[in-house]
Image 1 (cartoon, rainbow, N blue to C red):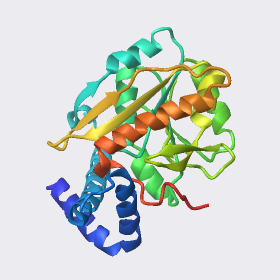
Image 2 (spheres, rainbow, N blue to C red):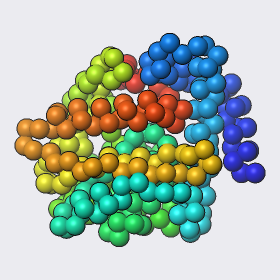
Image 3 (tube, rainbow, N blue to C red):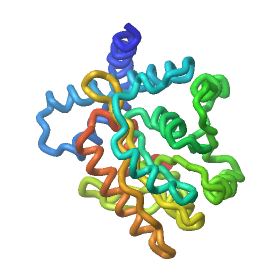
Amino acid sequence: MRLRVAMRLADVASRRLPAERAVVRRNLTRILPGTPPRALDELVGAVFRNFAVCFADLITANRRAGVGALVAAIDGMAELQKATRDGRGLVVLTAHLGNWELAGRMLARDAARPTHVVVAAEADPAVERFLRGGVAPVRFVTRAAPTASLALLAALRRGEIVALQGDRALGTRGDVLQPFFGAPAPFPLGPFVLARAAGAPVVPAFCLLDADRRYRIVVGAPSSVEAGGEEAALRRWVATLQAMVKRHPAQWFNFYDVWSPPA
């Protein structure tokens, strides 16, 4: 019932947010060129519905224990365990693809070490507490906090996990243009600068909805960031992200033009 209500509300929202709907449609046109107009319209609707489902599940995860019931499988957990076996910290890089905040909670539970999830601050403090005040064993770090970078670096050097999103430009000098679905788009270099400074490997991870409305977490192979190799690591990440978005276009929740983001 909860998910049916969420999907119906998403259908209403998509009709009442024409600007966001148009942007999602343009993004999908870049991702899937040549898709017939009717199929594009169906995909746009699916983006809004999937977003509503992920949001509803996140609220559920915050209000009760047993988050694992929402997750059908974790593919590649051995990669995560291998990357942390020597006690080093770990940078987990994800995107606004599927239920990224749920992924942070699950990885914190299974990795059995302190996990810091970097998030953008919500405009309303009450919304912030509602979304991130649950029982999950994670520490949420606001990206704009003045000492955030130093705190994250210290956490990695203590052997802890830091999870960040790597698919949205921050509008700073740390953004770097990379080819993405045939056109340059800005991506943040910061996660790779952080990983290199801490000597921590980077692992890509995604939390994706399956057909049965449960989640599959996909963890990729760890990679090191050498001194001077931050942009090369960014290129590898963007290639991984492009492949995942191509495979799951209706679960990529970016409601603005990624190739020309607002200043």
